[in-house]
Amino acid sequence: MIIIKNGYIYFNDSLIEGSIIIDSGKIEGIVKDYSLYINRADKVIDAKGLPITPGGIDVHAHIYDPDYTHHEDWFTGTRAAAFGGITTVFDMPLRLYVDDIDKLRLKVENGLKNAIINFGVHAGMMNENNLSNIPGLALNGVVGFKVFTVKPFKASDNAIVKIMELVRSYNGVVMVHAEDDALIDKGLERVAGRNDPLAHHEARSDLAEATAIAKVGFYELSTSTHVHIVHTSSKIGAETIGYLKNLGARITAETCPQYLFFTRDDVRKWGNYLKITPSLKTRHDVEGLWRALANGVIDVVASDHAPSPREEKETDVWSAWGGIPVIELIIPFIYTYGVSRNKLSFNRFVEVVSVNPAKIMNLYPHKGLIAPGSDADIVVLDTRYCTKVDPAKLHHKVDWNPFEGLEMCGWPLHVIVNGKPVIEDRELVAKPGSGKFVGEILMKYHREVDTNP
Image (cartoon, rainbow, N blue to C red; front, side, top):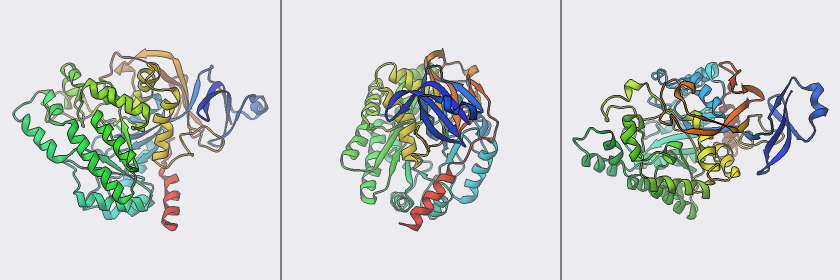
């Protein structure tokens, strides 16, 4: 048994003073006086009067591809996540198509050996050639199925509709990279012959994003499938999501710290280190995304974590790797630039980093909740501790980060996963292989759906 004492627990949408009793990986109780349990306790963790929240859940991170372990791997990626207060991460396909059970098992088996937090695995890239594998993947613990509307992984429109119908049958989520292929081609024509870092961003417009969101949103209204828009990057994209929600579409969306902070102006400083897809937009878009996050149009903050070695960034813009390391910074970034600057309430902060991701991924109330019976995935958030981002002190595999030098507050002091400490006093105490595959929860859920359609 573990007792977390002397904290302010996020419970029933408010912070209450008390202690948490943890036993057998679950939350046994929330109490005012822990003294009745002290004789049974193996460990007592002092929260020092700090907020205690459910662990963060990152629904979109590129952690493990067997051909890209020089970018990240299950140990380094989940280590960085844990130091950032993330207790569950969903691995998104990078280059390897995770479109059959053998590839899924390859990822899961490696994760079980090396991850230090809980993990799920998304399937993708789904298209007309592999959609028949959806039932088998769902019954083996996959909830998210990645679809692209743009090259190089583009699925045909007919395939997207069929994928939606199949995924609906298993109560899964179609996760869409939404950019319109024709408008992206047009944008690339406009920058033809250029090789400067801004050319990539200027080729990929906000209208391309909004057009693709609108199309898949109307497909959702036709198929009644849960659609999740990944890495929303523009104001008009968010407004399109809001419009679809008002029509009754079952659509959710995420954005990322990079889209809530950086603009194309920052590319002049960082060059290809800020090459990401979708592209960076304007300050107007950054402000619009914050409003959409606050008012519920955007549901989740995810990382789209996709680091690379420096040499894959320090090349021409069209060859440069697209992606940045960011998984460790989600929670301190959103706390600092959202809560501390009065853009988000504390409740909304917990919703977008924990509660909503758990609901979208069908893990709630197992995860994303501090309550008796829920999994003991818990963060003691040190809102008093502020420090500048230093790549040398972060825990992902590569040695750079574009948020370098920014002061952030709200770093985890303690992190508990499945009732066991992973981070104590900002030190790693867990070993590789201590994480669990959350597909075990989803397998049972999908079997029930399959048996009782």
